[in-house]
Image (cartoon, rainbow, N blue to C red):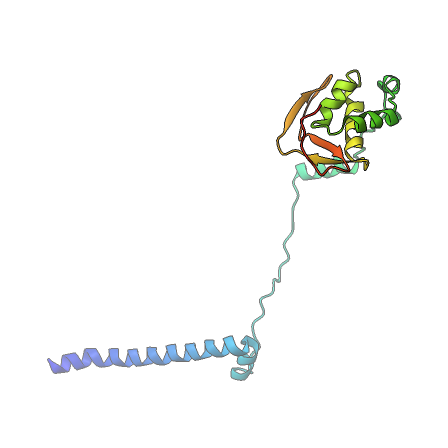
Length: 186
């Protein structure tokens, strides 16, 4: 019985030793490759044959289908559509010129009315016939004027003009002498 065990276990023990030796050698070689690089390690261990090159010896060809060739032919013969744009803006430019306002008088009226809680409502009450475009231009010009201070209010409001409804944060205007005292006045 002992002989049978020895016959079975001794070859297994030799195999385990060889396996340990092999795995140790592989681990050592991989460590050297990681630290020094494959070319250096391979040049030290085997100068007989060079490193195998991973080169593609056969070049691939790209074959195009008929659909691609048709698209390329269409692209080669492409001509963009010509768009004609008008030289001048047509429309109510004559009617806008009818609504020329005396801006000096407007500023004097506004200075006399200060403080104004909502500039848009003030303009709408004084000049109800102004077109929307002119009304908005005058509003923005007056907000930027340096003869008075303007303060943007935090709550949004909406105002119906002649053709559009404007949703905005109203500007409170007050004279340069006062420092933003909010007085309800239109």
